[in-house]
Length: 248
Image (cartoon, rainbow, N blue to C red; front, top):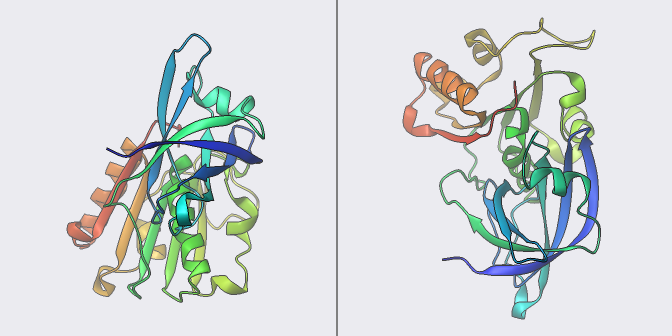
C-alpha cells in the first residue's frame, strides 16, 4: 500500500471557470509516469476525512532524492454537489497542506518509445493526456502525437493556450478541438458529439498500429472505443480511463 505524504500547495492556476491546477510540493515523492493519478486526503478539525482521486497533469517525474521534496500538479474540476472538489477548486490556498498517496496506476501510462500515439479526451479526461504531452516535450521526444479534445464550448477547454499553440518543442504534435454545444467561428466542423468520421480524419489509422489512450466520461469512452474497434484498431492497443460525468 502506498504511503500517505504531506504536501503543500505552492501555486494555483485557473484552467476554466470550474477547474484549477494545484501545484503541490510533496515530501519524499517516489516519482511517477505520465497518465498516473493520486489520492488526496483532507482531514477536518473534528477528524473527519475525505479522499478523492485526481490525475496528475504534470509530466513524469523522477523520485526525490534522500527523502527531499518534489513538485507535482493535479488538475481539479469542480463537481456540483461534490464534497471535495468544490473546496479544492475554490478554497484550497497557497501554503495550505494536504495528504497525498501515490502515484497509482501502472496501465494507463505512456513512456517515449517512438510508436505513434493517438490521445482522445472528453472534458476533464484531458488531464492525464496533457501529462503525456508534457512528458513528451520534456523528453524531447519526436514520437508522433495526435490529440482529439472534445468539450462543450470553447470556454471549457483546459490548458487552452498550451494546446492551441504548441511550441517549438512540440513538433509532430497535432491537436484538434471538437465542440458539442457551442463552437467558435473558426471551428473546422459543426457542433456535435465525436463520430467515426472524426476518428478517420484525426486518429492514426489502424495500419500504423498506434498506441491509443481514451479518457473521459464512461459513455464517451465506451463510444469512442467501440468506434475505434469498428475501424479495425486492435483492442489490445486501446487503453481507456473513465472519469465522472461532465456533460460532454
